[in-house]
Length: 544
Image 1 (tube, rainbow, N blue to C red):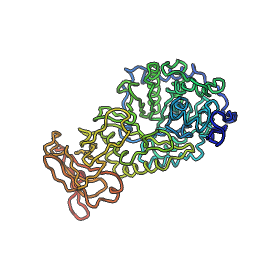
Image 2 (cartoon, rainbow, N blue to C red):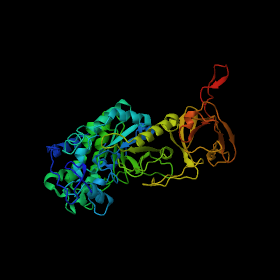
Image 3 (cartoon, helix red, strand yellow):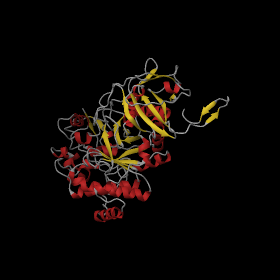
Image 4 (cartoon, helix red, strand yellow):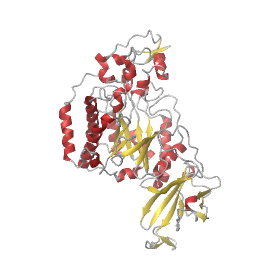
């Protein structure tokens, strides 16, 4: 049987029950003097009182989603942390390893030994990120086409991935020994990628509670209560002290890192958080007004009143076009947000399908990757990002800066509304299209985006048939993005039939699907000026 050494490294030898107790504590960071809470809260109140927002839902209803976010369409999420060291199950390993009857509990005893000897804390010194390359990571994200980045600032396990003066358990004091959040955000500045951060701290209130139900190091209140605690039952609402700490940790992220996206996981919808949510939003929006920047709070379920922030749907979607901008956060893997062995990866077709479906419905896609404990991104995830980036490099005009059309799309494949709907591929067909539009002077460019190409080379856009109830009367030029010439089209009552070029351009052939641009001219607009091309033939200045 394999057990663990004093620093948590697996070693062959004693059984779990007889393994030597971990005694090396040289890696444990020194206690810190927590900044004065009341003074910090008074400073927060001062910012709120200065306006323009106050901490009421009526005031927060004046919030407007910034145009940069409406235009961005695609961001990258990073789940990184010490849970990548055991690399088993998923990012909830820190909790599940203490829950009897789970595969994580059995795995931990089998591989690392008794929970009193080696606990979650013992993974922290092994989480070194020694090969972390923030510049290279940011360059990859730019090649992927990402417009904003949301790294996890703190997950449920209580290890802050940033410089947090309210705790000794942050990555500047244990593990990597560096401010990895600050470094990757700084590198993204160099690549013109907008800063973001996520907080999952709320759930820490109850996260390690299973470890108190049997002999484990979670019961070591003398040495590790500030890491594992509070470890309360989930049914017990958070205390005022915990809520104040949650607020001030978030304020630290806002002030020290200036993210323009602030993403929150579930459980902040708990009623106890309600006044603190309002305070946090007013503080953040007022800080953003001081910076002269548009910012976005992203939330789940009903944590915020509609229109006061941006709704986020985890691993899911919407049935149709939404009036307000929203977001789908999902991952390149179906099995875990953080790094584990044995991921079930999505395909590039899956990712393109998720992206275009979300964008067609007035949303943004936040796509997660999970680095290994050495700080590197798994090669499978690199490849998926590169593939999606190649698709966006070609077809980005149908995505970035667009707005939803009158209908989201057509075809037999629908995305179930709600969360956690990405357990399997949807099975896109060549009849499935998603629509976006871009309004220009005198015309609208309508984009029909398909994930699978038709075998007969003919794209049939039923929404543009002459008998369609959408009643689109006037059609202009039709192009395949990536192909310079106008396409042959036939309009029947049933559909606008668009004949794709054969052979396809190499750039189009190299990525999934296609994007067709159809010009919808405005009959009331002035006719475009006619220019002469090099051959002396007439060309329109716009409309193609």
